[in-house]
Length: 136
Image 1 (cartoon, rainbow, N blue to C red):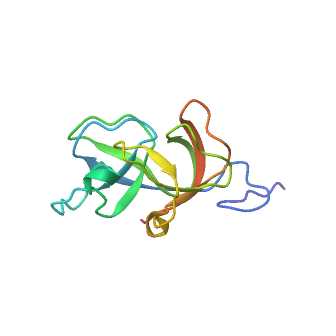
Image 2: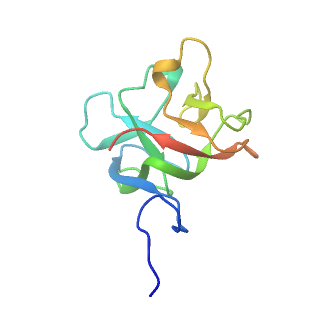
């Protein structure tokens, strides 16, 4: 009899991904990084924006297009196959929020506390994939 493996490990053909549902406080595109609304909106999330100070608890990466006011699915841990980047991410780079809302960047000196994951491959056309360890 065949054996099925659930979760990470040998024999599992599907990479492990942990997801959570959040309420979009604005329109969010697939692959964009979100954080809790600064006003402490509970399950409401908005796009991260490093230079605007919108980093109140990085929460996840959108797994789909989500309209403002709708609930959506977000990757909060494990493998994420679609991450919006700045176009300069190399395999193995630690990922941090970018100064462009919703985008990810490679870590620079002094940004260690904002690392939320690591790039698996170099990005292609400002899209990459990553191992993520956020929350949830």
